[in-house]
Each structure stands twice: as structure tokens, then as C-alpha cells.
Image (cartoon, rainbow, N blue to C red):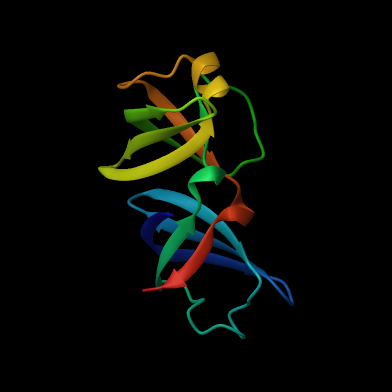
Length: 133
């Protein structure tokens, strides 16, 4: 499980869910939670939270251009790759933190991924869970 710590900087709430913006060292992540500030005390601007997302939910892109609906899109450098016949585990250096992505080996080869590559990693807003510290 990937884990990052950040500070809530904005909340957009509807009656049953919230879109939460979290600052992690100057990058703003988005998360949708099935809670609101009135139902969950941790949902307040300035509050510290842990962001959690599975390795299998982290996509990798090289030379990505144009618009895309994924809000969580950040640059990182590949620091290692473990290749197996079906899946590859990609180890990323994101602001001196490790982010791990599991993608198909077919995609790893198609993208020509190698250690030292500058890539973007992406994760859908609904795949980022929040936990209190």
C-alpha cells in the first residue's frame, strides 16, 4: 500500500460525500470520501491525513500530453523495476518518497521503462483513501 502524509487544503461537500484536496509538499492530491465534515471530524481544512492507495491503482505514463480526467498526476523518477512474466513492479522516487506501481510487463516493455526514466504516475481520485494520523 502506498502512503503519503498531507494537509487538507479544501473540501467540497455534498449531502453524502466530499471531494477533498490534500497538499503533499506543494502538490495537491484529490480524494473522494463517503463522508462529510459534519459526519467525520477529521474532515477540516488544516487537518493532517494519510493518503492510501494500492500499487495496482498507480498508472505510469511517459511523454503524456493533452488533457486527462485523472486529477492525481505527478512526476517521478524510476529507481527500480522488478519484472516477472506477467506483472512488473515499478519503484518510483517521488519527492524522496517511494511510490510503487504494479503494471503488466507488456506495458512495461511497450513504454520502454528503464531505471532513471522521468515518468508521470497517476491515480484516480476515487482510489485515494484518507486516514487520520
